[in-house]
Image (cartoon, rainbow, N blue to C red; front, side, top):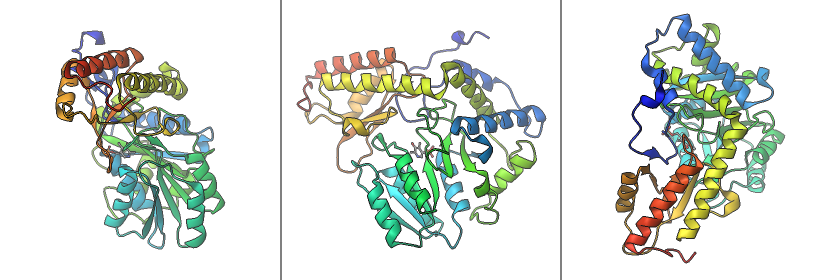
Length: 379
Ligand SMILES: *Cc1c(COP(=O)(O)O)cnc(C)c1O
């Protein structure tokens, strides 16, 4: 098939997901699959195996589960199926996605507390250790790897070291980083990790996945607070019935994801993808500073995934107008989500290459010149 004959998207998505997927990934969705047939279940098993090998050098210790829905459904399935009634969850927060984990615990009436670092600071291991010393009830720790609210990267390896020393269960929301930043779950002492189809693996939306220590999921029978989000039952069915899902699975999305994994390997694996994202992000920040935009975070806190920029103070600036002008030029950016600052965000993951960032910067510069909103933040 000549994918290049497929129509181009009217704009590329510079967002944290869903993101621009390749034509060859989208083309795989042009056929139907039977959910109980081996053809389809073998696709699922292939994906489950590959996810584990992407996540660690010790694949035999780990297993994976796919779950219908967006990424949050998978996070909720983990929180609801792993923390037992007698447990207590400590959530390290520095943005909206960390807070969402705590909100899930509150909905499910799970005992939890939050250790908040503020949106501009990384999670800090000294404070974590203090908390673990003073609250012996804590059994599980959760943290977001790339806090997509700001683009902040949290030190998951250092946190894992502390969590391991205190003998707790360690959960990482690696939604917006898995596949785009090298992570070894075993090295980082991560017991359970979640991501979704439409982030750095560059599939299309429709399901999330959990990679988990075998010894942990094997003990999780009967904990779930929800039938459809029962992670243990979903795993057990996939494990014992060659990749079968309990309920209707998003077949086209799953097949597209298998192709996305092939393309990740073709690109050179996670290390190569990380390099491309990093190049995109550095180019973006450099160019934006030159035009006059200030990034919200200090350079050393940035992930290579998404960057928050402070909105210009000029009265000629209006996000919606800026957004629409860029959309017309072929770029969709993302609104801000930070509490105390007027911001907007630009993602650089998906089918996005340095030449796209160059074109974006040129469009932004032209826009700013035409509205006379240069030197916005005294950069
Ligand atoms: C995208 C994302 C999620 C999940 O969001 P959904 O809209 O449910 O897919 C969770 N955590 C982080 C850090 C994310 O970036």
